[in-house]
Length: 491
Ligand SMILES: Nc1ncnc2c1ncn2[C@@H]1O[C@H](COP(=O)(O)OP(=O)(O)OP(=O)(O)O)[C@@H](O)[C@H]1O
Image (cartoon, rainbow, N blue to C red; front, top):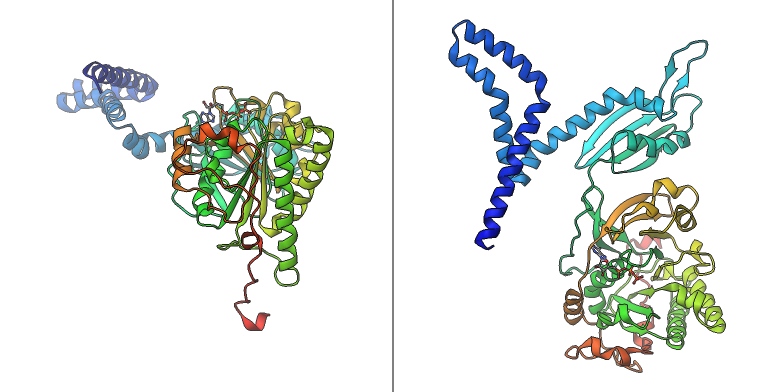
């Protein structure tokens, strides 16, 4: 850091400490009044030292706190700032619950009485940046009444966002995110673990890691241009690349937008299609994998587990609509049929699809219901959010309210209805090149064409990558022998 920048940073911290000290002292005016009276009494009664100490107690304490916060914000937050803030949230909810419930339309009149009843606040919990209210509906209300009021409750308590879930008969948990931890973009750690079932893509709204389950699921990612679909595309490919390089996962990619997205990390993929003909070939190859695996597993096992030489297959499709909506009619028909078959048959056989799309209309994503989880990044309107996630999700997962300045932020909606607000890590191009160079897909001896050599510049090879489809040879596609049951008596 240059001398000037250092001075600027020190001055900034000093200014913040001064401002905090004044603001906190002003907020403590009741205690100051009391200490003023007590201090004066002590001074009048000739207890000079004690009187001065009482008078200065609050300003000195706030100055010490402010300096601590400026010098070491992390230790301050962990030891004092966070616990104080969370205590204030809990107290506010307990104090204001009745009034808020009434204003949010949850008050219920007693019979023959002018008084009102509110949903019972069973528990108030805080953790990190979240505040959780466990609430029981009064007789005559339903869980849906509480869930419908969650957004209004969040607004009343100045929350950034809200999730709600039913946890028992008539009981709902409303989770308020009180401070947005997703403002700051983040980059991922270099992948070094072999993962085949789930990947860490970023953070959840409480700051904890966001893990996306992949095994047995198909994922649809929808977001307007610039919403950050690339972060999720590369989060999945990048995190799976160690497993792909070890032969436990096989990555397939379709990018009909000229290969611009996939080219930078193309070496992670065993098969890449960048034009319509190649995409159909690729889908046919993947469909053959499913057929062979079905034949091998039939009557022996119902659940696929990846092993070396018999990998899980993950197909990433950038801009699904080009394939299923905007391509020539024959291509659209064939691609849609193949994709529907892959989506309906592939999950239990270790074949997963992750598709990305900008435009969520029915004409472009006619097979939405075949995806088992959806990630909604920034969308254009409430109707788009409803179209993508379903009617009940306009408020629960308001993707249309995501700010343009926060690419990579979105809502994950699983098909059991669970909603998570998340932000994906951003994968810069140079990191992708490094990951692709470190974990290239295994060279396929039986392939028609091999993925490009590691030492060449991938960007220069976009032209050569067009149309590359390297269907797996029999060795790779043949399913492993089903495992013996561990307990022979169970067989
Ligand atoms: N997770 C993220 N965190 C911070 N910034 C991001 C993130 N993801 C993307 N960005 C920024 O937003 C820009 C657009 O992202 P990206 O290309 O992934 O959007 P997209 O949804 O794929 O758009 P399109 O459909 O037009 O390709 C990126 O160039 C990058 O600057």
